[in-house]
Amino acid sequence: MEDLIGHPNFQALKKRTWSDVQVRAAALVPSDLISVLNGYYSSLGILLTLVGFANMTSDSFDRSLRGLIQEPRPEVSVAATRNPYREQLEKLLDAQESAQLETSP
Image 1 (cartoon, rainbow, N blue to C red):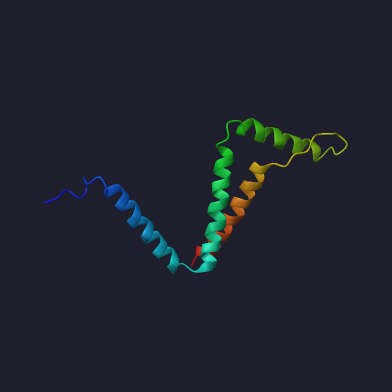
Image 2: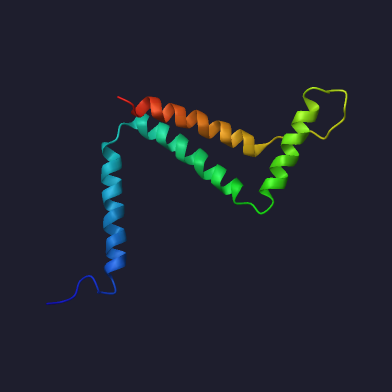
């Protein structure tokens, strides 16, 4: 009897089978739920990418500090920059809330 688990093509076959199952399972999910989940996972992916940047901590802190200075003291000239870390976190939390509402019974 042939050892199928030890066969060199087993990993590729396993991946292909899993991919086929995922596609078929996704076809059963309602489109509005797919949309909500896509919003959540795309926001999560972007945030995880931002967090993976080498200077994320200092860059995020710098952007947050500039916003904090500019807010109460608009007369102080600070180079205002948007804070993609905060923006993506807020998008992720909004998407998470939507997903929880959509998936709760």
